[in-house]
Image (cartoon, rainbow, N blue to C red; front, side):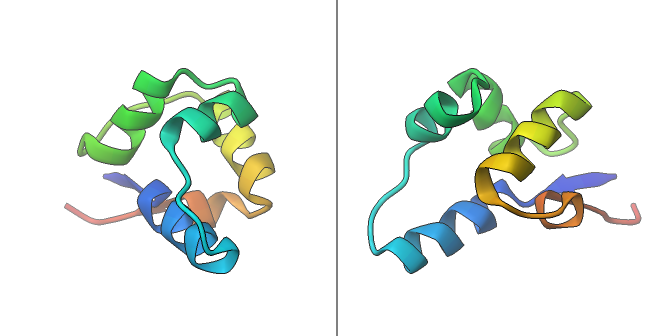
Amino acid sequence: MIRFRLKELVAEREFQEGRVITLAEISKGTGIHRATLSKIANERGYNTGTENIDRLCSYFGCAVTDVMEHVPE
């Protein structure tokens, strides 16, 4: 199963910048609908496209492996 690390990325950035970062802010910065971001962050096993992964990598300035990881079931 693929596990998304969106919550961890948000928490890291919040710590670095000393402020709260909302899904609405990420949505505005990436062009990904807020509901889709919520599903990526909260739904176990959610399936999203590579374009969204690319946008998240660009937004957070990170590698694909920072956004998602494979977890054996």
